[in-house]
Amino acid sequence: MVGQPGPADGWTPAAQPAGGPPGRGSEHPIVPRCYRHQDRETYVSCQRCGRAICPDCMRPADVGFHCPDDAGAHGGRAGGSSRRPVTRLGGRAVQGRPGLVTLVLIGMCVVAFVLQGLPGLSGGVDHAFTQDFALSGQAMEVNGEYYRLLTAAFLHVNILHILLNMYGLYLLGYQLEQILGRVRYLALFVVCAIGGNTLSYLINGWSTYSVGASTAVFGFFAAYYVIARRLQADTSAILVVVGINLVISFTISGIDKWGHIGGLVTGLVVGMAYAYIPPRRVWLQAIAVGGVLAALLVAAVVGV
Image (cartoon, rainbow, N blue to C red):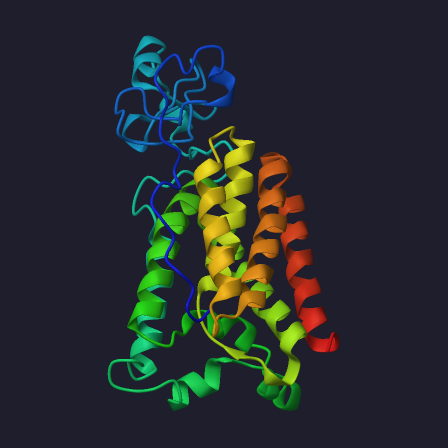
């Protein structure tokens, strides 16, 4: 929402030395990296040896993918070429155009910023486009314009506002998209944006008026934390970032703190569904996320 501070670097846990701290290796696991390309993080493993492999090293097999060594040793079969690699959480590993959905979301925010008349540069937040799509309690109560619960996430009040939110969206979104796959990642963005704006509306009612992608970004904070815990990665950095952002949200005027809290809680719930419901039961994940979305919409319609 308005004024959301920029997140810091370090959300992706740094890899530990091969042996890890003496006697504490299980508490500081190594971030999965391709065994042939150590600069590439990946959550896809060879079905034979279990070594992490990046898209360039994936060799189709009857079940999943093999690394180049095992594919050569066992005569990789073309029959598995129609299968696509999956991450440890069941998302489809993207071999081309990584982060495509994240870039599209950023592009939509930039286009919306232009349609707003470049607020803070050449115009103000009273632009007609902003008025038509911002989160407005009055518009929702009088005209039933509940689409604003989502569209407000693509609007911003000035150049600093959009830059900070797009920075957070790129850093966290790029990684979450790689782990979850495009469809589940997009669902996470939509539900978190609506979740944050719904809580803001329920708390502020008629007087609600705000814009910004930080409802979704705060949801990404929570989802990233849950998923990192599930993958046994270091979560200390993301906790620090969340703590700093929450302090700022509650101490600086003009920031919709309830939108941030709503996004954070929604991201936590959806992240738990993705992290702890087995990937083979993707239908159950879909039901859980759909149920969260339905509950939010019902609360927005009848909760005030």
